[in-house]
Figure: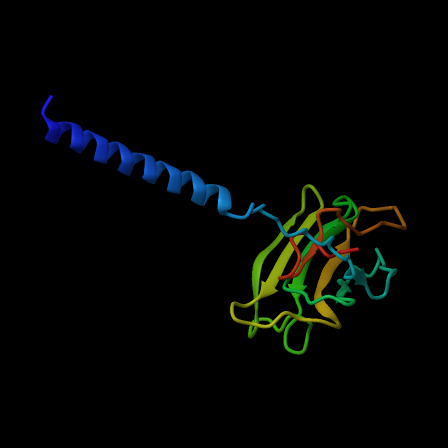
Length: 183
């Protein structure tokens, strides 16, 4: 083999060995980096939804519409949206509707709030109402009215009491929590 070829193989072997050495040396000198995931803070549930008054009387004789205001209290949290899910006995209550509060209410609808859902299923006795702050609007805190539930007693009912309850599907959202802040 010519001397030039041997010299070239020898030089290439030294360069290769040098590159391997530097590659291994630089990977062992890097500090061990452990990936840390931020620990998620538990959601503090401070908000509550409630009727005011908590009990009301309606007359089956008068056949007039009754109104039951629904309020929110944010507690120590800032609220970005509310999902109200109500259950009632459809055999006892008729003409049920949820009327959003407007103006100086908690959610300033239609100015600074958006209604996402407002449905009443009269056969199952379920009311679904979802409202959120409008885009580019600051979250809300405090206490205020979010709507009024209107209904009448069924003309054929003989029952004197009935319940309207918040379903476990009700929720209050915050921009800083990944789950409902409703307690």
